[in-house]
Amino acid sequence: MSFSSLGLSDEIVRATTERGYTTPTPIQIQAIPAVLAGGDLLAGAQTGTGKTAGFTLPILHLLSKNSPQNSPNRNAPIGRAPIRSLILTPTRELAAQVEESVQAYGKYLKLNSMTVFGGVGMTPQVRQLRSRVDILVATPGRLLDHVQQGTVDLSRVEILVLDEADRMLDMGFIRDIRRILALLPKQRQNLLFSATFSPEIKAFASSLLNQPTLIEMERRNVTADTVAQKVYLVDRERKRELLTHLIRQHNWFQVLVFTRTKHGADRLVKQLTEDRIPAMAIHGNKSQAARTRALAKFKDASLQVLVATDIAARGIDITDLPHVVNYELPNSPEDYIHRIGRTGRAGADGEASSLVCVDEHQLLGAIEKLIKQQLPREIVTGFEPDLHAKPEPIQNGRQNRQQQARGGHSNGQSRSRSAQPSSQKTAMRKGTGGSSKPNGRPPMPRLSSGQ
Ligand code: AMP
Image 1: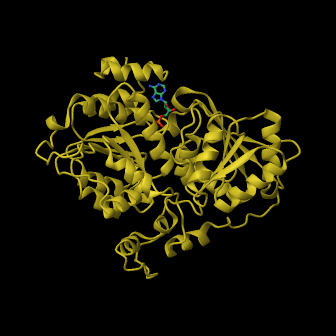
Image 2 (image 1 turned 180 degrees about the vertical axis):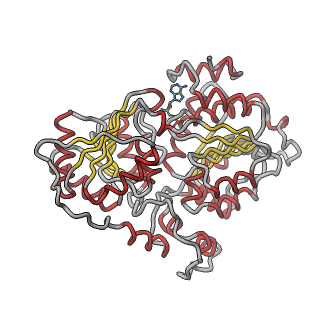
Image 3 (image 1 turned 30 degrees about the vertical axis):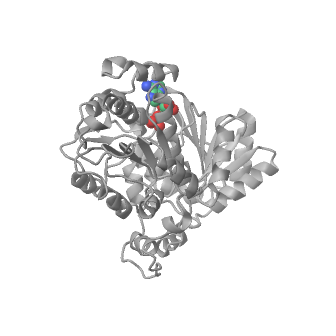
């Protein structure tokens, strides 16, 4: 099976070959022809399966073959070149990464793309939006800011992609997304990608999609035999020492380390730096510039350790990332899968290590139940855990959930927005001032605390 046999143009095949891809991944084999056929798509696929190329390649093909005049929305007023495809993502990093793929795969085509996300100035985005943009990759909040300012026109979008839709819903973007949907032409192609299919996602998909092609990739957790998973049992207070020991002993480089909280990430970076292990953190409290800088250094292998919280790391793609470390297990077992999905991607070998203390045995049990396998345990000599240690409540768990309910959570979008329950967000946008009145919604169940 080759990319050209999937019906993609020579220019696109050439770009994928230059990127080093010779064979399409399973999701690409299914998604590319489905998207090229023009219908809606509902795909259950996680980051790491090659899903980005699964939608960007056929979108590039369709847009380059059909001029706007031939497009389904040809009756729309002809003015300046319209935005023809809108790709919505939950995080800035994912938006940047998707657009980078669009650029790479579309390098031999005359199509323009750009990203729109928060945490950076509006003005350069406004300027760029005035020029020709065929494909816009955006996070929902900032896109709506542009809508409100009248700096973006979505009335001629032909293809809509919702990438990581489950995460967007978890992050409380549903109202934002619905507002965006209302601005799009009724006749369009919709592609929805989601790692999981909760009842909420199913209901949303059925309201959005028209007789979609269904693609469900086998869950990575069941099949990810390219990732060697291991649990290191250790005392709570000795995790940092053990991490330093493992990094030194195995000479690990390019280690992505997950902590549960932003504060924990900062503290760990400080401690690793004291141990002379170069480390930086990315999380929602860091400026976009700091996050971009840390990620760039990590990607070009000039930074040994990147410490991240779940949402900040969502969608990060570092090819052949060799090591992922769960410094703390996530509150949600699903997040374990997302975390270890950073390694062993697209067939590469990877290693995922979890440092587990007595407080986390329940979380470990929930993960093992979800992935349907028992993870091998290891005790490192000199780091034997105290068998009589009593579990303590996991710090920040409940407390942060309450903060979330009050609007104290930051998820990597602009802080004030993401912190608000949806109804408050709308109020703030309208300038009515978000009150702290509870909106009756329970806190988001799958958001890990304190990202
Ligand atoms: P994604 O799931 O889209 O985040 O992609 C996961 C990783 O697989 C990225 O590093 C892609 O560059 C890579 N990738 C995507 N398609 C292919 C392919 N056909 N062959 C090899 N690697 C691929």
